[in-house]
Image 1: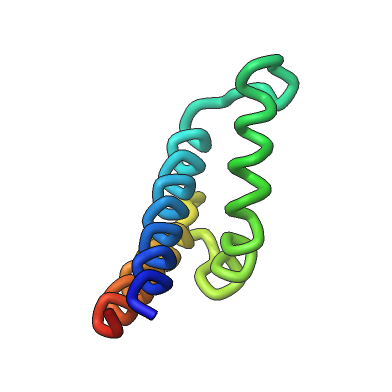
Image 2: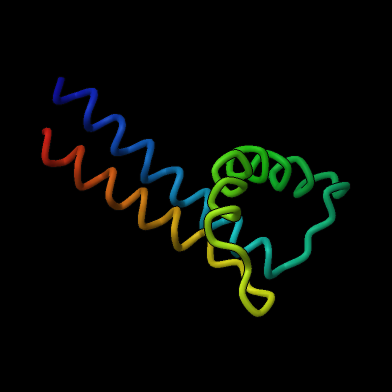
Amino acid sequence: MGQLVYILILLLQIYSYVLLARIILSWVRVSPYHPTWGPIVNVIYQLTEPVMEPARRLLPPAGGLDFSPILIFLGINLLIRLLAGLA
């Protein structure tokens, strides 16, 4: 049971880094058709969009800024703390 919890925590931490990459990519415009960066950008967006969409419905953009990643980071942090308590 302990190993499974540590694996889940590791996956959540990796996902938070992918989410951070998406935030940085929103500041820097990269063409999805670029031969090197395009596939990487597409994978990052495909991994994060299923979580970002419901978070955007809960927390709509304010002043043109999207604060939904903060909500997701808080959720990931809460999950990690709960899982660490199980371990």
